[in-house]
Length: 245
Figure 1 (cartoon, helix red, strand yellow):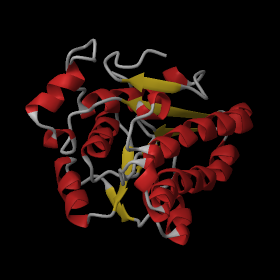
Figure 2 (cartoon, one colour):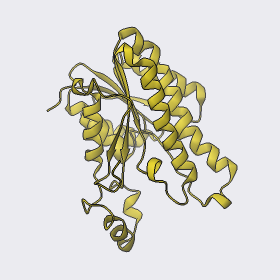
Figure 3 (tube, rainbow, N blue to C red):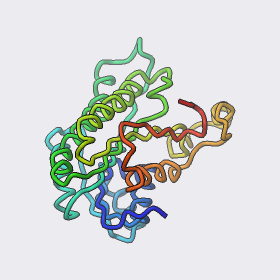
């Protein structure tokens, strides 16, 4: 198994299904973790599953000052920081012709702008220690698009372009910046789809199933590892073959 012994990681959006599994996988690999989100009850439940070893840091991603401060808080709580996983995100779906400006702007603000601020905040300490892993969780729809999600697709596509730019800026300092782009993953959100909808989706997936949060978490652990030290500016697509790039 990949070892992250001694590494310290911050995971945003840890109160969700994918974020929780990422935290579990990082801890299982030996990392110390700080978990962040807005739902304290869910974070406490996750920490209990982790054996109480995580540091809990709540953060409202619409609050710029709170976002800027979060990586420093994680570094202080953990005694350092080596890995940043930006997993938090929101959707406010609707056809473009009827989408309100505030619904477009709020999704961009949380999914893209807050991710940029978090990435920017870790650059200086990562550059100083000449090492670090930044892993931004994008989406398959960033590349293939999806009707009714112009705002979400734009935010996740912007994340990929941003990550490529950052990777070029800091690659010489031992820092990697990559994205993971999940496809349809079995979570509370996909559980709301009816049987017909699920069948229509899986018919287009060569693996013939939805992915699991553990599938995404495994990709994150790999990109956080020493074995991925020569991989940067890339997007790891975890989608069962739905999109082949």
